[in-house]
Structure formats: structure tokens, C-alpha cells
Length: 425
Image 1 (cartoon, rainbow, N blue to C red):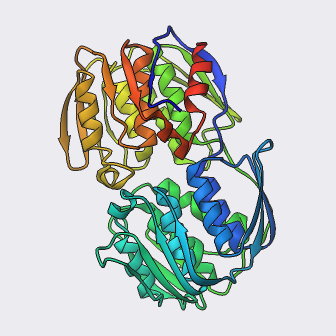
Image 2 (cartoon, rainbow, N blue to C red):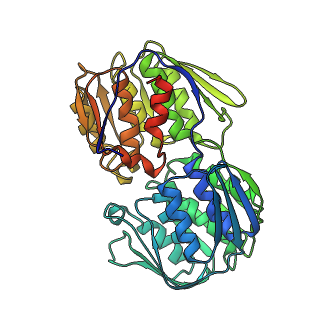
């Protein structure tokens, strides 16, 4: 892909689209299918950098995975939770789900494992997950003793027991622990310390665990009890379209004053990011929920105050929409966004100011006051969501250039092609 891409303004967008499969569901299903007894067929799976590094790492521990790209299908021959590491290296790039989930999985094996990634991944904290796994008896540490990758695992199986995990950094820590826990030697009890961010992602995790045959008890997202010595069972599993990716197309309807239908999702989708539509409704859009699609129709937009702690991957999308609202928009509850692919508060604020907004930044969010929009070159910080969300500004404002658009390959390689097709250009 070119080093930059210019976005062409268009009129109100009217159309329908089905985004690729959910990254969150694909990577969870891959972990569980790899641990399962028997064969699993994952339909509607995402093909992206994040899923490729997950598949590569699982193959390195002996899991057979075949891919039919034409049918978006992955066939996984589970290893029943038995695998051996012989100084096994896993390169995770900048995939947070892969790093957190594979770290927990590696503690179930026997032998040595090392998990590493790009420079940004070496800045992303993982210390709380390491400590929780140590509480469960794992022999695990970070290579530099700085609570960030690379991670070193001396696998001897996971004994089990009780562990406490912080809830305010990343729900992926808890999801990794949960998915590995059925294979512990004894019962695992997990206690969340403080308020859990991104709770819908944890509910997604527990649901898919049950779908593959595991049993567990949960209490209001605060305490989980997972019996040990269980086995997931291979099965066919259909993966929903990515709701985080869908937010860009719903956002396009809001920005352009158009009408966009996203196929394959509903109000009852496993993915909590469908809740982004409620934020758009508060801003003045109309939302129509059906059993197999959700339609957003744009209207006059107004600024809102919103806690986005449960839908934090859509903060950048809402920020782009907020530039076209009447009045300021205040986003709170997303302090953990500073530890994502980039600082999704500080770096986002910088780019919004380039576009003419006044931005007051605080630890867990920001207030965006729209100003006179202006052309800008948007730095993406190698963050796929920065590129995809701020491209929406170019649907109304001429002169918007997205730098390093290829970073969208992390979760949505064809994003700009799909956006252009939806816009009719």
C-alpha cells in the first residue's frame, strides 16, 4: 500500500456492508480450538496481521491449522492441551490479544517459551498478568524485569489455585487467564481487583468457553471459579463480523448524514461494541436494530458526555464524529486506552487539534470542542484504529491525508477499498 492516502469528500452515504470477522472472536476461538480435543472449523474468520501472528505461534507449538481464504474458514486440529516447548519463540508483532492470550496458554505446556513483539509491544504492560499466573503456580517472568515483554515461560503445567487480577488496565489479562484455566491441574478462583474495564469482552470470553464445552461460575464480572482438568471439545463455530470495524461505517453515516446498514450484527451480538450505536443515537442519529443487521441514519449531531469504558475501541470513531457536532463532547472512563497500540488519548488529542478542534485532555479521556475544520496530514502512530477512524473526517473535509494507511492490515487489510466502495468512489 502507498505511504499515504487522500480521502475524497462525498455526499451522504447510502449503502450496506458486511465487515470481516471479529478479531476478538477469531483470536479467542483460535486459542480455545487449539486447546480442544478434536477438530474445530471456524467460519467467517478474520484474515489480518493479528490473526496471522496468532496462527503462526500456535503452529510453533504443534497445532495444525489450515486456512481456506476464499471461504474465510480455519480448520484447527486441537492438541488437547498437550504441547512441548523447545526454546520456542513466538513473535507477536503488536497484537495485544495474541500476547496476553498466548502468555497464559504457554504456562499450560512443558518446556521453554519466549514471547516477543515489535518495539511498541515491549512498552505495553503485562506485569499484572504475569503476577496472576505466578499466583497460580506458573514459572514465568519478563525478560527485562520491567513488567513488559519479552515474556519467558518455563512451562510445567498450571497448578491452579487462587489469583487476583487488576481490572483497570486490560480485560485481555482476565480473558487469557479464563481461557487457560480449565486446563489447570486444580480449580482456579480469579478475583478482579477494582472495576473491570471492557466487561463485554470478558462476557464474550466466558460465552465462547461455554460454547466449546467448559464450565465455570461467574459473579458480576468480579469473581470467577473454573474447575480444573477440563477439556474443550472441537466443534464448528461461526464468527460474527467485527463490531469495532462496523463502528467506522456507522460513523460514516453519522458524518455524511447518510444511511448505512451493517450486515451480520444485531443488538444481541456477542461483541459489546455494537453499543457504539447507542452513543450515535445520543448524538442525534437514528438506529434501527434487526435480527441480522443494524442501520444507522445520520442527522443533526450534538455533543454528549459519555463514559466509554465498555466500548473503548470505538473512542477514536466517536471522536471523529464529534468534530461535526454542535457543542463539545466529553469522553471518560478510558484511561486504559493509553496502553494500546499507541496512546489513544494523548496521540488522538494531537491529531484532533491538527483538524481544528480544541481538545482538553485528562487522564481517562478528553473533551472535544469542534472548531473550523481544516486540511491535515494524519499521523497514525502505526495504530490501525487511528487510520480508520480519522479517515471519516475526509468524507466531509477536503485535504485529509492518512499517513501509513497500511497499518490497517493489523485487523482490516481491505478497509480503504471497502470505504471507497461504500462511498461510491
